[in-house]
Image 1 (cartoon, one colour):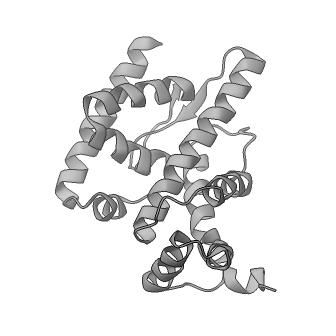
Image 2 (image 1 turned 60 degrees about the vertical axis):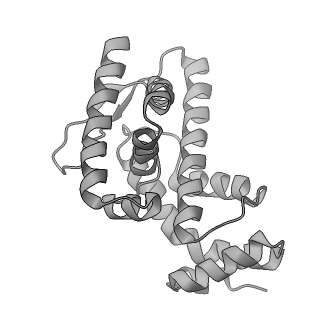
Length: 195
């Protein structure tokens, strides 16, 4: 039996995580089960970072978001390359979960507005944006520039730092910074124009 709480305080090395991911990729279900307690704290930190950007009163909690994402991750096996690949896929799943959650709330209330910020600065002022509109605009951006859309997804929904995005996408930090600024400006203009 795995001591779940004991693993929460451990910080495994990237090599240990990669070894478990590779074993999972080869069908080792025990490796998958060992992985969750090791990545739980990091997934929860990333989910919390995103959800803190959302208006108070948000009904989805980081724990729920992480558990739902992990259930979806457990149901697939994309042939994990490494730790960065795992967290990139987790970020994408968290985006889908959040959008599904917003759609469900939108259907119930007819109009869901969420205060979010795409800014990096601590003093960035949240703007009232519709999460569903952000998702639609992000899909449009993916058609125009898939890499910029992936950067936004990893930063906004996945909570990755610019350095982590650069590593995940194998890009220079300078290029990621530039693409992030361009994508943010494009999304704000697109979402504000549709409001």
